[in-house]
Amino acid sequence: MIGVMQEADAFGTVDGAALRDDIRRWGAALGFQQIGVADCDLSAAEPGLAEWLARGWQGDMDYMVRHGSKRSRPAELVPGTLRVISARIDYTPAAARDSWSVIRDGSLAFISRYATGRDYHKLLRARLQKLADRISAAVGGQRYRVFTDSAPVMEVALAEKAGLGWRGKHTLLLNREAGSLFFLGEIYTDLPLPPDEPQQEHCGSCMRCIDICPTRAIVAPYRLDARRCISYLTIELKGAIPEELRPLVGNRVYGCDDCQLVCPWNRFARPSAEPDFAVRQGLDNVSLVELFAWDRATFESHMAGSAIYRIGYERWLRNLAVGLGNAPSTPEVIGALRARAGDASPLVREHVAWALARHHA
Image 1 (cartoon, one colour):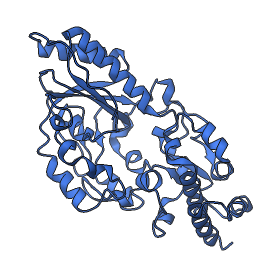
Image 2 (image 1 turned 90 degrees about the vertical axis):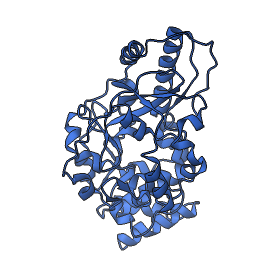
Image 3 (image 1 turned 60 degrees about the horizontal axis):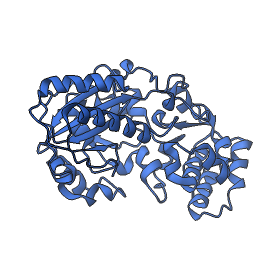
């Protein structure tokens, strides 16, 4: 888990509303676009989580089950927690090539735009830690823990309660000023801050995210079968991508942004000024053949510090093989696949063989 519960001296009477305003100001100075406060009552979200898990829609993500009720009960995860400070930071890279133009060019590799720069976890964790330290200095101490997407935290439900937005039909958090292109992080605290008011839902009758999903993973509004989601298939799934879904993956080799790209609210998303989120290694506009030619050392050096690094070289090649199987048939594509037909990894060989069969090669 990220963060350490900090022991501090007892603090006296706190003007909660004034402190909350200060926290917003300190957060803005640290680069956060929005800060909100939620209470710990997630009882309304708990049945939906239980049903989702009962259906097995989490797939291989065993960690979604492992912690029991701690995910939906913050005070069980971190005893003493009274409030959750929820923060968002925009991530849209400022100079990335238009996503649709890449997706529509089958020779190119599409990488979810959140992953074209450096891994956000360290940046977000460090900023949240600085914010928590600033709060502790102001109140004479608090008990807290910082989280950045690596513990049993229902971050969307908490952000929704904290007034940062509403859950869209694609299950992501939506904000009227920023769409959904942002990262979320949390500070669990024992400070009795006044909670913020939730926002109203503004999706209306729009179904664009559901209609655009290549694999029909959004089975109904607010209901996602992760086992069909391209982000799950290319990032979380450790084994073979189901053969019937491979043609639907297209050239999306790490994640999928389709449901966000069509969302009307993302026209308000603003480019990030964070240098860490700028595109690295030309990942916004690079060919499948070029990436497939990387050896392990090249992958590890180019992807060091990237979110992509965590899936490892083998799954990276698996994903690229699927992309090449869906690419236009050219001598370069077929040659790249044939060069790895005897790869040491059975997982890679399987996907390369499928791709070559797609090209009748």
